[in-house]
Amino acid sequence: MGPKGSLIEDGAHATLTFNHHSAARVWDAIATPEGLRGWLLCTCAEIEPRAGGRIELVSGPPAYHSTGKILVWDPPRVLEYEWNVAPVPEMPRGEQALFRYELTPDGDSTHLRVTYRRLTRQTAGGFLPGLHAFLDRLDAQLDGRPAPDWATRFAVLRTEYPEWSGNASPAGE
Image (cartoon, rainbow, N blue to C red; front, side):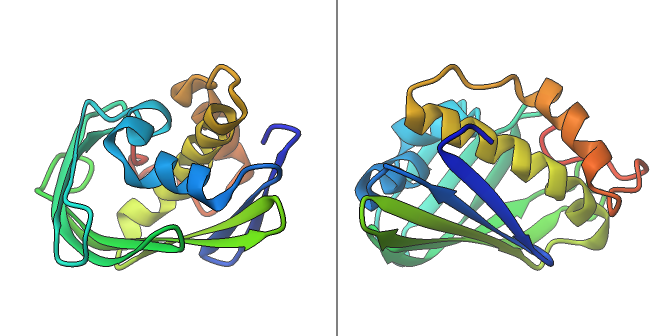
């Protein structure tokens, strides 16, 4: 993480804290097509900004195509949506997961808690270092710094996550 952010691991969850970024600014980065294009490497991002709206993303280095429904839309506090991906070689059963982003303002800072649920066990292991690499890119984007290369950052981080077996393909690789 850069000098202004920190990642706190809590079991299968992670809390990312950004110092000196408003909740509205973090929200724009995680809940708008323009914001997602940078840190999440989205080549396509379509969002109907409401509960019940549709979300469609093509993201990450392998350009995973995901679709789903927005389950919670509470700007700038909570965004939760379905992440449905058809089977691909590294996810032979596909995925029908839930992604949740919770923002808690703390003065001029914002705490961002990211929770991914219902991932298959095979996919989940690769998501640990992969998500961390994406969140490092998000931190850089919010700070106005050049974003680290995702693959390079992932290669470093995967050694820090013993849960990642090396047999499962990581999300985003």
